[in-house]
Length: 139
Image (cartoon, rainbow, N blue to C red; front, side, top):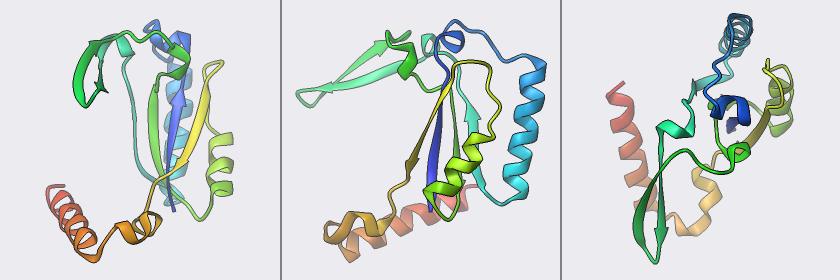
């Protein structure tokens, strides 16, 4: 199973406070453990929402809004993609994550083909597989 693990860092990250050396070292060790265990598929930190945009669709029409975004507690500060056997295993890994303060971490299962049921026809599955192969070939 794959899970997206999202860091919701809160006010300090939105204020542009970058982690200090101690946190960076601890996070490096944590990420190294994830890699050695074969859990980490991807992971990155994100800059504050003041450096981003949000695209919303109202009535099917896109509207672009510049950051920062009002609800700092709902802004993602970074993410990991884990491959583990269960939600419980993902939770155990997340409990070991070094944090700066009042962060929250959300864990969400990544939808797999079987999660879409019959709506994902064999033709759509084949098209999805082709796209994934093209992405892999570009790495």
